[in-house]
Image 1 (cartoon, rainbow, N blue to C red):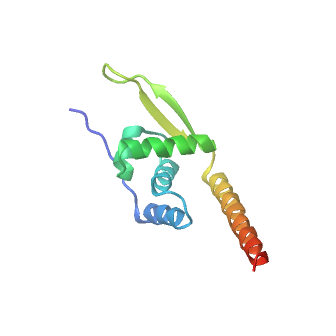
Image 2 (cartoon, rainbow, N blue to C red):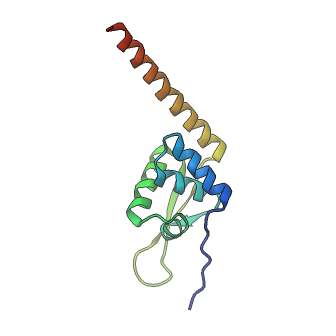
Image 3 (cartoon, rainbow, N blue to C red):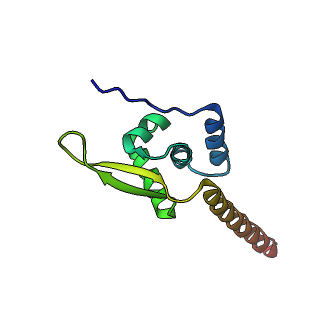
Length: 123
């Protein structure tokens, strides 16, 4: 029988994920990002277990993170017969990701303010 360690969030990591969620990041994306930020590399299964997300949620989060260019992925052959296993790791450092999120949020806030100004012009 194989023994494998399952990584779980610490209080600090849970707080980091909650802060990302509070600023508008989807829960699944925030949890996957925090998990990957604290591991060298992880499989989909590791992400499912460590973040307490279901497989479709992990898949959706991974697609978003890849689209942003924040993670890299590669296949490794399975230990047994069957499909290869996908592995994931951060492609850019966490501070760069935070800068990117900050820019997105500033743009969103400026767009909202522009809409409010436009609404005022109708009054």
